[in-house]
Image (cartoon, rainbow, N blue to C red):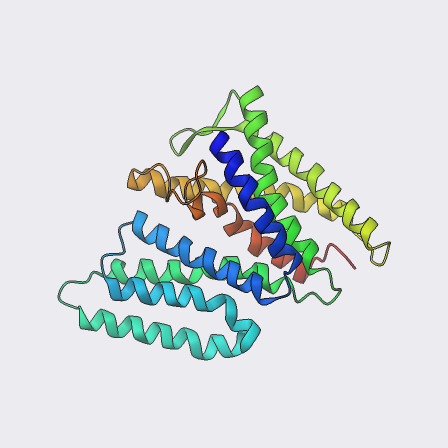
Length: 274
C-alpha cells in the first residue's frame, strides 16, 4: 500500500499537469508514451515479441497514432497510414514465411492498432463543439479509476460473492455494485463542480450522467477482467514493474481501454452537456 500511495503521489501531479494542458502537444506525447509502453508490455506478456522487426514496427505505429489527427486529420490517417502499416507487416510476413506463424503477425498487428486507438479517443474528446472536452476526459478517468477504488474498499468490507473467481479471485459482486454506486456519486460531483466553474454556461444532463457512471464502472471492471484474463493465460502477476505497487502501465490503464471509447461515443451521440 505504501508503494501504491507513493506512486500515486508522483503520478497524480503529472496527470493534473497533462489535464491542465490537455489542448497542447503535451497530452499527445503523454498518450503516445502510454500507448507505446502498453503495446510493448502486452507483446512481451503474450510472448509475441519474438520478431524484432514486427515489435519495432508496432511500437512506432503505436507512438505515431496519437499525433495523426492533430497533424493530418483522421481521414488522411485512415487512407494512408494504416495501408502503409499493413503493407510493411505483409512484407515482414513474406520475408519470414519459413518460420513465422500467422498469429505472430495478426496478434501484434491488432494489439498495436486497438490499444493506441483506444487511448487516442482521449485526444479526440478535446475537439468538442461546446468547448467541454476536458469534462469528458475527467469523466473517463473517474469511471476508470474511482470506480475501481470504490469496488476495492466495498469489496474488502462486504464482499462475499466472487465475481469471476478463476480470472480475478479478489473481485466480488458486492464490490462491483459498490464501485458503480461510488462512481455515480463521483461523476455527479465532477459534474456539479464543473457546472459551478462554468457558471451555468451549458446545461448538464445529470440523469444521463448517472447512467454513464453506471455503465462506465461496469466497463472499467470488464477491462480489468480482460487484462487479468491475459495475465492468467500467461502465468504472470503484472504486465510490468514500472509503477511500484501497481505493476505496469497496462495494470493501471487497463480499465481505461474500454471506458475511453465509450465516453467518446457518448460525447458524439448522447452529449452530457448541451
